[in-house]
Image (cartoon, rainbow, N blue to C red):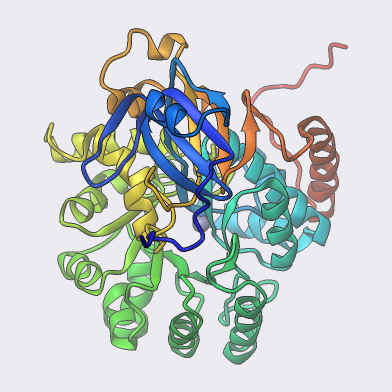
Length: 468
Ligand SMILES: [Zn+2]
């Protein structure tokens, strides 16, 4: 008998028993009181609790009674550096130009290697505690190896990128050839298929020459890597490309041969009909970060086409963006917002909905980042990336439709246990791969030092009255 994956262990190490297993398999079956058997890093069996116990008596169990077991969630656009140590520090009433040039650029430039690692560790711990098991890192300016080290230490799966650009004079801007060499070296150090793999990552927007855009697409193709970059979160990129080439951004990228299944565009909010068709026909994927557009006022309610892309079979994943944009690294919050925005903008109760939004957070998100063969559903042979949601809280009481409850009623606060590749990353709501108390102290100290080096200080909304 041949198995779909040659290295699936036949005897499991762990049974997760008694929970309602939301499989997200092609039939979207929910096994009420079901069980999942894990052997090594993979799912060995999915079935009834009594059936798996009989088949493998004596195997260790994780009791998931009164719980909902789901696939680990996919966050397709998360900045692991730059913002985590400066969360809630950038004022929220300033223009995006001021936010970028007065805050983000100096903060990125002031990061030391250890800050990149600490930032990433903090963001990974938050993600894991919210049930996110796969992260597409949105781009690290200086020290991607330190970010990869943090992801490995936290025990999260994902991609890491060295943020490249060859236009302008921001830190680490370089000629296209140098940027491509740097990206190529990263794809060699972290090849596709690893727990942490390289993504060919550009800043995007208007900060890449045609040479860099085309070279990056070619490199991604050769390395079998995802290529990712920002595009059109607001109307600015449309104006830039119109001036640059007389075309809209995605028409320009299509002309360069950059669109395709290898490409994951963050945002793609401001699209015209032609660009929607280009995304669909080229199978280009989109990371949809709805909180960021609302937080930064980018016009998603008037321009966003993500629910339409999804409904038409387009590749759309959810993302949480940055600590001063999407803010919480919690894909369930993003899923609720995506569903709500779809309903409200279309004035259509059939738009997206909880089931679609949760698919975006799991199997359709995995498909968008090219990993649906490995993660995104609870199926035999897939990697054992699983979340146990405690369903005893008031937000789960009484129990109704599980898709609605996952998306509308709860968020990351219900997450009790998380396994990534069969290994516990979270147990009883705490990250077990990292000392959270020590991390909090280190982060507070590093944050103060980082803000001082960057020459910025928090502008509090309310007077801070010393009262100790
Ligand atoms: Zn971003």
